[in-house]
Amino acid sequence: MALLTRVGFWILVSAIALFALFPFYYAVLSSLRSGAELFTVAYFPERFDVSNYIAVFQRQPFGRNILNSILVAGIVVTLSLTLGVMAAYAFGRVAFRGRSILLMTILGVSMFPQVAVLSGMFELIRSFGLYNTLPGLIVSNLMLTLPFTVWVLTSFMRELPKEIEEAAIVDGATPGTIIRRVFLPLMAPAAVTTGLLTFIISWNEFLFALTFTLTNERRTVPPAIALMTGSSAYELPWGTIMAASVIVTLPIIMLVLVCQRRIVAGLTAGGVKG
Amino acid sequence: MRRAVAHNTALPPLPQQELPSSLTRSRVWAAWGFAVPTLLVLILIAGWPLARTIWFSFTDADLNNLDDYKFIGLENYLVKYDDEWLGLLTDPDWWRSVWNTVWFALVSVSIETLLGMVVALTLNVSFAGRGIVRAIILIPWAIPTVVSAKMWNWMLHDQFGVINDMLQGVGLIATPITWTANPDTALWSVVMVDVWKTTPFMALLILTALQMLPQDIYEAARVDGVHPVRVFFRVTLPLIRPALLVAVIFRGLDALRVFDLIYVLTANSRDTMSMSVYARQQLVDFQDVGVGSAASTLIFLIIALAVIVTIAVGRVRLSEDA
Image 1 (cartoon, chains in turn yellow, purple):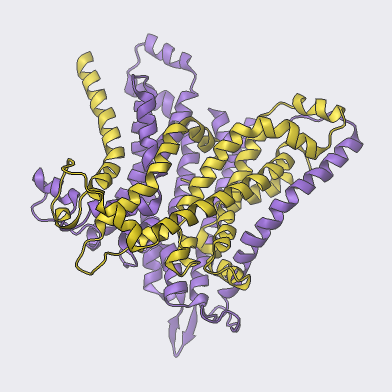
Image 2: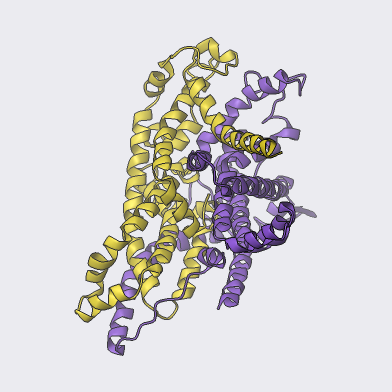
């Protein structure tokens, strides 16, 4: 009986791992096959054909798309964290009137459906002349990331004991100095976690990137992959699409494997956004 | 365990300040100074676009010329022409998309909760390699939605897909199924991909709640020889219920605004179109900013209602805590 339970348990664990991993494994497998090979199903690698990986950069400006994604996500993370740490000090350390209403409103914004602001955002971006530009995507992505950053950083900020701040206040430090000298070093781990999650949110964003860009050179990775086609109507584009998918997913998987503890901590503190 | 809930819906109390009041006042000023940049940015990029979207829903604006429009009242929503009711509220495609979204949210969140519970209970047992399995299940969550939709699109391919191949291999189906095109299976395909992608998130939230449970209750139950299944339903489930509820609500809100997955997996097909896909189609493909904005506004109202209920529930829980 005990043996049976153990075997059953390991079958369950293997099933969970297999279910989670198989689609990615199959994408890697398909990306290494090309042409007519894709007309048959294979479960194990036969040869190592990298032509899809070359084609994906030749047929479209995929390198440019990756660079766009990195630039947008990087700047969004920087802006969100800078604004977020300041706001988190205000909301997390100081009792002032209207604080909880403001926090609730910010939480509400983080639950906005993106499509609810789509036409207003389109008008805003066009009137600033940002349509089909990276700054346009940065502005729109901030709507998704900033409320999330403020909320998570505020909950981290509140966990810190009051004594650390009191000593600095008695010494006559200004709030700006306190943030920089006292909180910033202590917040570093929380900021890394939040930054990581913000990066993933921005890296994965699709609706705004699809709607606010027009040309292939300006697209970020998600719309670039979604709109990828074969070189002719008769060719299956799946080999190149899978190669592109693997290229953009590998770094994220590395990041997740290295930082899984931090990510889990951040997710449970934030409790928002899948 | 209470704490996990408090974390999600409300924050722990502020540290008490016992300092002179002039200092307190200058701190409050500083706090406003630090909060104002974020508030201004949010007003500009969230508040203003939302207000404009609602305003556009009462106009006949066109995407090609957003500056030239006129106010037409509620005509985008409902209007009577020659004894015939027209407008968004009479469009069967809109109601179809509402029904698709609600059905998708209910079914996918239910399955994710059940499977998430199974995964969480499994990972709550300590075994060699638990850390690795926990990292592995994070992978579907981290893969961009567009990419996972494409991966599954290929796996579900009607002619060359691996899913049909496997099912035919074990003899479950005789002929290949056109998963994403067949009206009977299309929405189920969407649910399947969403379950794959989001169960890990659910499992991790439940796992966190499980790991905060006091161990002495389980000791006592074991000493008394209570059956594990009974322990689960009588002890574990009631204790993690609040955390579970929060996770379900957040996932539910998320599912109601689904866009990426459906757009990539099945394009603008009527059979699977969600509310968000419908709104964007009106807005971008048909260039009809008026009707698109009307749909956006209704989506906002539906989700706002759900959020208000959520926050109200969160408040109640907070006051129970105090």
